[in-house]
Image (cartoon, rainbow, N blue to C red; front, side, top):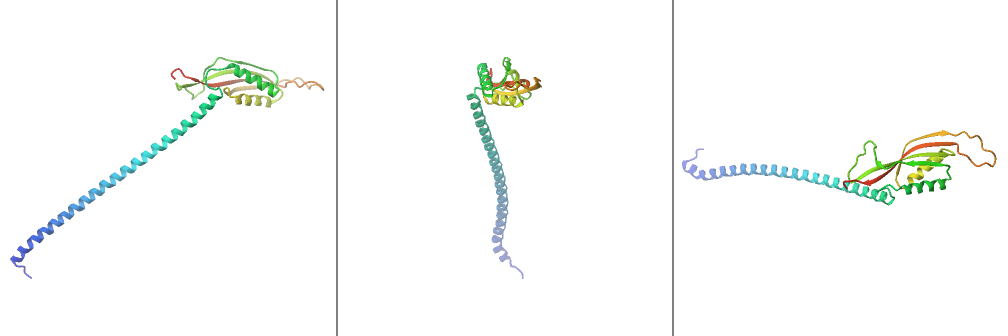
Length: 204
């Protein structure tokens, strides 16, 4: 079939319109793909920001919980007299009270002057510092449990944290007590105990 020249003139306008529509469609598809890529990038960035925000919130909540727990522990130590300057009278009273309550034999001790704690891994923070008063203890015992009870009661007195550095125990041979004779100590314990407290630092 042959198309007349007059028909070609009539088809020229629709052909141009069709070409424009194809070009517009291609441009729309390209723009849609561009918008989709931008939207995906924005979504990915927002997801990353949300995860980062959740991580920060979780970390902040953990730090807040840790601070709250530390504050409770600090107040407990403060209420027990474990924070501040050393109070030798409290230690003397505690030892005398334990000796009487446990019906212990002779207890000799000496307490050195307070100084910074020198344990490995513990450093001064500036606000609060660990300090220690070293106590040398010489006890006469009926049996080993007397020493264990004394150390437990000393720790429970709350005046300080009692950390045993070393203890040496030796037997005292005094023979078998006669009938009606009072019990005599059979063991001797020589210990070095660190009485640890918290003290306000110089930079606080």
